[in-house]
Image (tube, rainbow, N blue to C red):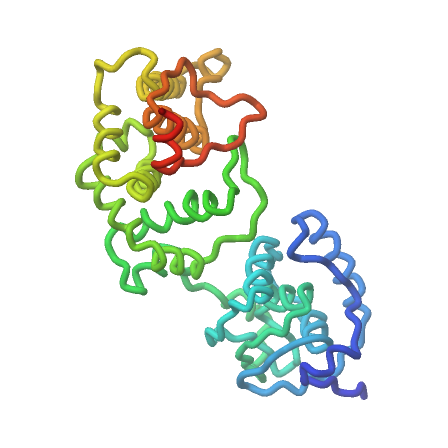
Length: 342
């Protein structure tokens, strides 16, 4: 009989994992390759008794490796999920939710692979509830996790942040956090750690004025939001203008979006013209040159920021589209803009 392994986290220093991988600086392809090697190796490994009972445990080291060896029947691994859990563990934001890892009476691990992989490849112990000695069923895995997963919207609602919670969650996830971390680009998305429901909730609580801005756009600037092609962009832009400049400046910008009599070189006129080209391109034939006028949401936000900054500085414009090497624009504070205009 194989010797039982210790469940004491203090023994980790004397143990070496079979596979090492820098989860927080990896990518889906290299992670999949590492996992494939681990699984080939795992099939030939002896199983040491886990001696885990139902209850709370802090799993680490060889215990985690042995549990992964026993994890034969589970869904395909999703790298973003492992990365999300690993980031939470590494940043000490992992919470003891009570969601269990399931071990059958045949010592098979039927649920928990993403959490276990996150712990294994970060080297951070996993505090989790374990349900042991679950009666073995051939297709038990098919009955696990059939509930509906919570979304960022759910997190805001449950926390009492009702009213436009779905909209707010999308603004925070798609724009606010990425903008703060400098992770918005003209095309595609820059690599960054996954944004979790906890991140969304923390951000909403730290920025209650974002909810105020969302309600202002909904109640006062719905037509302008349509002109910007995206209500989430309209909310984010309005919030940033309120932060940097206040209500009067926001009103000036929203009025300009509706003003048909501005000069042709007014930056908001140039923005409106570019958005109209984008709208027309939607209905153009697939191979039409007009299709090149389509804008991605990050480009719409960038052009809107540029138009606003130029308007505030009193600068005219002929085009707003970025050049290949242009950095992504940022909202400018009131004082630097005023100084630049003098």
